[in-house]
Image 1 (cartoon, one colour):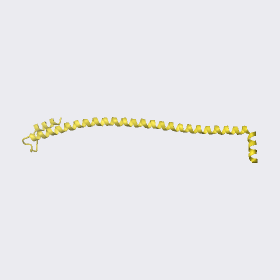
Image 2: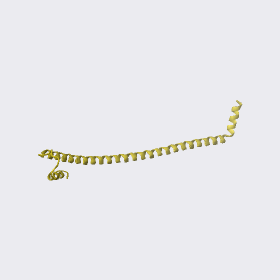
Image 3: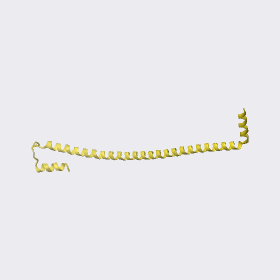
Image 4: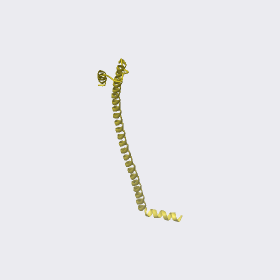
Length: 121
């Protein structure tokens, strides 16, 4: 009981020191919390910037893929036209060969050769 009374008397005589220490502790705690909040904010800003950059990159890649797909579709349409043309020429050639009276002959005459060349022009 004597130690309690001594502590209370000391606190009564040094109340300014205790108040100063409490204020200093409160300021230190507040500063530490503000530092943590600033650090978290900086981390979040960095994450947001990174996500925005990733989104921009993804949109660019998607745009490039769409352009490539359109180009491939155009090329496929052109190739389909070429294939159709070649198949028509092959059919014409086969019809011509079938129409020849001496189609089993090994050599073609000059007129036959010219006709064949005309099919492929």
